[in-house]
Image (cartoon, one colour):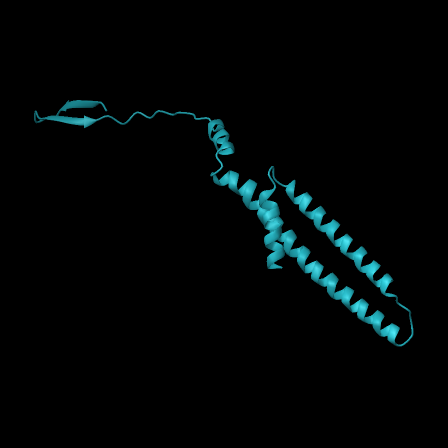
Length: 141
């Protein structure tokens, strides 16, 4: 800091400070962006690669379990109605046909569940957080 000496009218010496000089430095954000993409503990990396896929997986898993419960409820209602109709001799149901229908429904549920998990693994590069969220959603649903 520069100091300027002034002599006042009464002969005394006074030191005054000159205004500070301002330096403007233009910084590039390129180094920050490059560091945040490689820093696995930065909030940008965690939200984009862990947080959002986990929430997506959570929502899909929760929805899948609720839909599975609804489908099982409706399927059970249909089976009960078939049993009642068979009891009153309206239709004839064999055990083999009933087991074949149950097997087909089970295979359809497995393939749709597998499709959802495969799709969630493509949300992020590793796919761990999306699939983890899916299974947490299944547990909560």
